[in-house]
Amino acid sequence: MKGTIYLDHAATTQIAPEVLEAMQPFLFGKYGNASTLYDLGKFSRAAVEKARKQVAEVIGASPEEIYFTSGGSEADNWAIKATAHMWRRRGNHIITSKIEHHAVLNSCKSLEEEGFAVTYLNVDEEGKIRPEELERAIRPTTILISIMYANNEIGTIEPMEAIAEIAKKHHILLHTDAVQAYGQIPISVKELPIDMLSTSGHKLYGPKGIGCLYIRKQIPLKSFIDGGGQEMGKRAGTENVPGIVGFGKAAELAAYEMPYRMAREQQLRDKMIQTVLREIPYTRLNGSREERLPNNANFCFQFIEGGTLLQLLDMKGICASAASACSSGQSSVSHVLKAIDVPKEMEHGSLRFSLGKSTTPEEIAYTIECLKDSVRKLREKNPEYQEYLSSLC
Image (tube, one colour):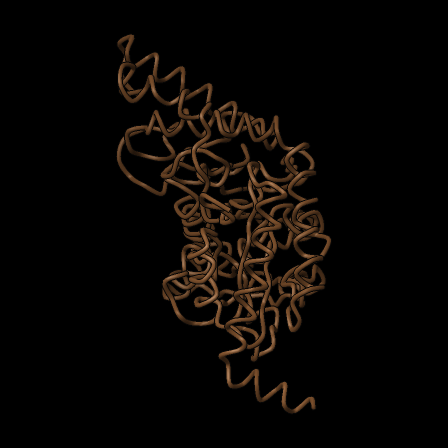
């Protein structure tokens, strides 16, 4: 099959044509600073506020609850660190999970160095936290719960309704990293008592370098970046108008396309999962079979090194991921796979396929055939695999 087959949409996405078209005027002609008072600046300001509304509508928020950031990592840092420092007089305990994105985990580790206490919840074999364990972990000093909406590696969707109810019951602030879930599955902050939510534009066919933090109106979160009075006095720095406009358009498109895209991606995903598990022996699906993102399929292949398998697929024009994009340069085993107790003999053989709205059945079929061929070739050269086969005789 000619051309590139891109199955790494959880890492990033290509800007949609409609998004690029919306951004272009603010890159060349309408370049005014949105904080200025003359017409060129007012035009930019109006575009920023339109985008704020577009981003808010995806989750049922009010526009004034959306604060633009440089991306999901900044939003995570802001939510966790600012909350910790502001509520320190009330307590110093934070609860999160062992499978969070490193923007959350490293923020928590940084706070531990300042004297905060952090509980890292275990997850079950599907990657879900157990609500009863969350409730048991709560202390009188607990000030924040931060649990991701859906995992970036294995695609498992967390039981957010139960988590939110527990947080509300105990009057504890709740933050969720929804970078992988926003615009991919339905989320409503009107129905769920979520206090803060992070997301990023480049996961939904928008530009890189732009994201937002949703902050519920009643939460007086302080600014994380000091400077001017941009973003309603909450986030200093000249507004990235082209990025914000692109994010807004991408959010609008994502909301409109969501029902069709979810159904289509889920059908292709399920076909891939069923075929791979049936036709490639000694393979494991990571994450929940049912409660997972529509476009995520994550496998572990025994007797295989994931990085080598990824290289073979790349030679065939297939883009996938051996780990999360933010940590793929590291050789250690994924912290997510460790947390869900993947067997030692399989933990180095993981591969994530994340589908997109342009993925075709033909591309999935071709990928499966290439995957079968590559796994076979690698196992034929693996002494451990040959020894294992001999032991079965």
